[in-house]
Length: 267
Image (cartoon, rainbow, N blue to C red; front, side):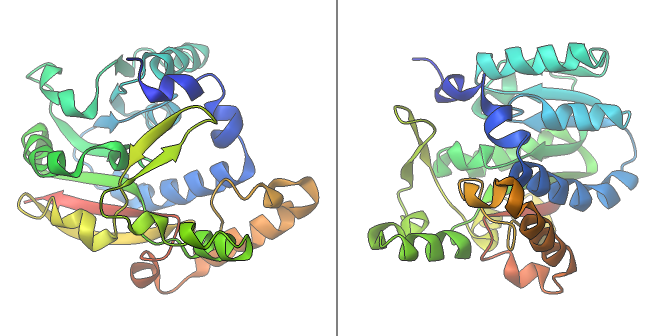
């Protein structure tokens, strides 16, 4: 069976990465990462669920050496094309692997930072996350960093949206303990599990110490609220992004945002 994300690879950047909401949310991720990168002892990064390579390219432009994996061969194809267009092939190596197949990477590859963006780990069976913790621990250098962007178990924007749409059964859909079949297209869905910051850290606490977590998209809405991306409404998006930047309660409010970003260090 073809990976579900093959179906959206060709248009993923057009439908998220390059749109205002996707761009603003990704920049929130990068602002969180910047001070972490300053403290890395070397330059080796593993990108889990790299998609079309947007983050791998961002790291490479900052002179990092990136190993990037994704289960979707179509996503990898787009990523390779983008990387070649920017002449960064010497800094990024892509592997068509699932996050559950990290043992297939060369044994000698060790990393200073392992990173996963925009819900790649939400698509993994929760039963696998505890063993993933051990694998990531073994792949990281001493005092290495693990940073992940996770779809939140509760999203205030989404709950209000479904209430206004009178779709009351969907208001708390993310809280389903068995996960839900989330749509990628009209015809393709993928099993998705949602976590709170504390709930996600639970799976990794044996091998990692939590440093901090922060909301991604508390005021900036989820990407499916396309009303905000109309040209006349862009000013509101910029204002909402400013509110996200000024938010003084980042730890607490990361329990109500579209995504949260969590930083852990290897014990």
